[in-house]
Image (cartoon, rainbow, N blue to C red):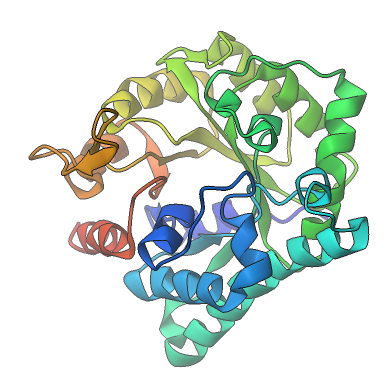
Length: 311
């Protein structure tokens, strides 16, 4: 039987707070992630640090952790000489670290329950590690795309997580493949979040009307939304999606910081351009599940949680 943990939690709270960045938070704690495996590299080298970041997000007020499996695929690990079995063990480890952080936090703060763990399923473009997850300019036959995603989905589905986070998806063909694959795991719910070209199109140019129509017909799709986009692009996209679906909407954009490509450095967000500043605007536009993506921190999530508690 399919249980919808998002609907269950939203019956208790108006807004579900997600965690923030994992990879850029690991970098801030000394990890070197200039690597095709990105945060999945730390699963091999320093898993306790991933546990600590998950724990810190729960302590900041996050009600859902996203596992360190965004780039954890057998194909990516094989390039490092790891076997399929070793790859599967690392994917399961990503779930175990988040689950242990949740359990340890709830042992200290039982009143925070329920807390969720979502298993990250990043796009094929993330495996390519060339920025394709922001363009969607890749094509595989559906069976090959399903075969790419199946080992990770299978490992996560059996690990004890609450749902899958199929995230940073730029391509309609990949979305179709994931929906078809999800049917092989009928008791596993999932959210789907996308990168966008503009407020009405996926990165590959597909209208959001087509995306919503596909997911509205998928009972395992328990929420949909957008992630890894600039703060200022969020509200128009939420307005579009709210017209197209009755399902809960989620958003976890990047921090409002500005990247300077010349100096290769980040500069502080302009005044009034943080997650907390945008919270009520996004809620008004229909978002019920809100967190952060690249360069957001436990401090950002704590500010979101405070904003929700003051409403």
